[in-house]
Length: 161
Image 1 (tube, helix red, strand yellow):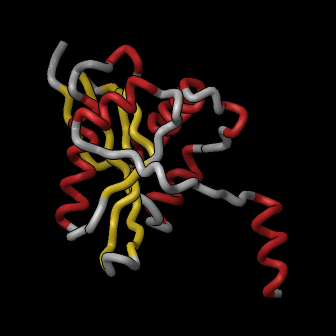
Image 2 (spheres, rainbow, N blue to C red):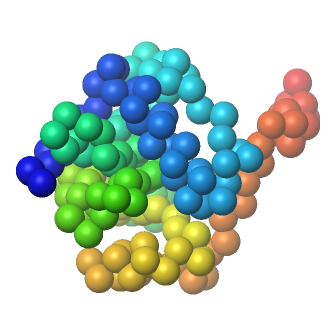
């Protein structure tokens, strides 16, 4: 089978990462929300640098990825790390790749002296929930995530025009 490697994503990985992002969208039954392109990802990761990505590679094939970015905790007055996505191809699961990707992101958080590493998980995704709990992650049951997108952001922003 061979050994996998975890490394920082490169610009030439963007096509492969976007393909994996689409697989994640399908897995989560959210493909209707998929609008990613390799060009947009490349711009976000390597021009704007609003996020970073790590990839898992097995025998020259991208088989997993993580996308993460810095955030901030006012209660800690320290930076934190938010894991936006962690995905491993279904055929490559149970090989330790997901754990290695998460460990890689944790190492980056530690290097940056982050006070916390956070992410979201869909309530129905039992395999992921079991995995996260197995490494000691705890769900925040007192919080609900709220989101504005598209026109709702524009409408709210109009107040300050």
